Structure formats: C-alpha cells, structure tokens
Length: 238
Image (cartoon, rainbow, N blue to C red; front, side, top):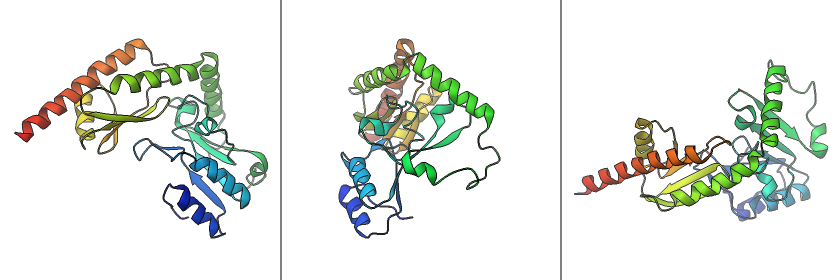
C-alpha cells in the first residue's frame, strides 16, 4: 500500500509504474477537514484504473448514503467505481458497514472468501433497509442539498469564518485562525456538539431532517461561540 499526493500528476505517475492493483480514495476527505479531491482527480482515476486493469475503490463511509445530496458522492461526477465502502449514515446510528461492488469486481469477493462473525446480520440489514426507505420516501436528498447550501451561505459572513467547503450536509467551515478547537469547546458549553478535525476547520454533519428551527438554533449558538473566541483573541492580543 502506497499513499500518493492527491494530484492528477501523482496519480498518473503511480500508474505509470505498472504495478497498481487498486486505488483507494475518499471523494471528500472527512477526517482531514472536509477536503474535496482536486477537480478531475476521480474521473482520471477511473480512466487510469480501466486502462491498467486495476480497481477503483471509494471510501464513502462519510460521504455515502445521501450525505452529499446524492446517494454517493461519486454520482456527482458521473463515474462508476468498482467497489464502494459505506457505513455511518446508512445505519442512522446503528453499527453497520457494507461493501458494494459493481460489474466484474463482484466476482472477486464472494461467500467463502471472507468470514465475519456479524457479517450479514439480519437486524443490521433491516435497519439499513428502513433508513434508506425513509430517506427515499421523505425526499431527504433534496433537503440535504438545500439545507447544506443554506448553512454554507449563512455562516459565510460570521466572525472568524474564511470560507466553506464540502457538499450537501458534509460541511467544512474554514476559519481565519487555528482556533477550531476553542470554537468547538465554546459551542459545547452552550449545548452544541461540533467537530474540529483540523486546527482551522469546523466540521458539520447534521441530520438529513434538519429544518428551519434547528438551523436557527445552530446559528445562534455557533455565532455566540465564534464571538466568544474572537473576543478572547482580541483580549490576548492586547
């Protein structure tokens, strides 16, 4: 296993060596701070994997099951990977993960090639079916897209906010100083749980059902938390 820089040039160089069996990638790197791959990266990865008879496997644990407004983040790009890993949202809190394969890749992994004590758990499978049915019947993918855009727009002009990134309801709020942990701590004292995956990034991944009242409450608490940290920074600078 070899890690490469997330650039198309590095991708092409890796395949040029002629010994790539598979490439694993996250469409949006959640733990790195909600960092999307460069434009064209996954499209080129699909082309190269096909040319070199290699597999394109996507980690959609954070981006899958509707988190970005499509069932899978790769659908925004119009490509089909050979395999996708999913978890988290598909179980709505219930512990569950799955591997989805496409085309000839489905012949590479079959009963007997892998043993798991809890694999194929009927309760977990029933939960996943219920969650996916609810997302579809309630048109929650539309809500994910609309509410994600609304949140990014409404936080853009708040104190300390430099920019936003991500897709749907996987949002990275980039701050203009490395104070994300301080902001998260201030928010927690006010009853809001947010995450700081990088020194200058706040990550949001709210429920797909988020509505007007939840967004209003979030904005009130988040703004107060940003104000508190900004005021403390000004005090420390004196």
